Length: 132
Image (tube, rainbow, N blue to C red; front, side, top):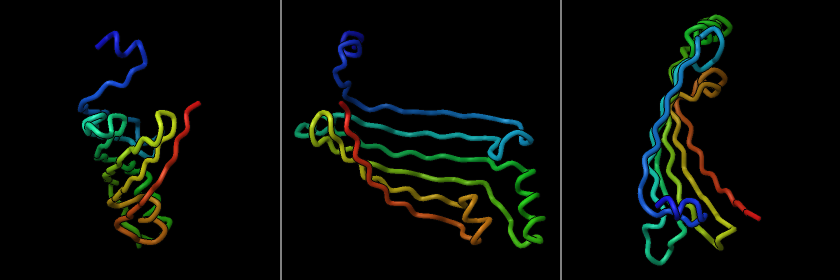
């Protein structure tokens, strides 16, 4: 495995990614964050460079910001912590060109809650990456 990583060859298999963070609520709008994702690469024999995955996240919105938004909207907005999930599939067109469609669902998106009182958002994305 070490030799393969140093050579630049793709490593096939399944992996898990986990992260977390904290900031004082007086210094940041998000004062707690956590996410976990499952990622797989090269599992389909006919598509050895493709990958796919799914992930979930949680953002704890600062209590100070929640209070400020509530006061600025004359107590008509009750901001909740934000949560979301994403799935994607990375299609390899050539080793240097990839097409990556993905879907995200967000529960209680901060800006949508404050501006429009929306409790969710759905995003469909498509990215093309070219490495040279």
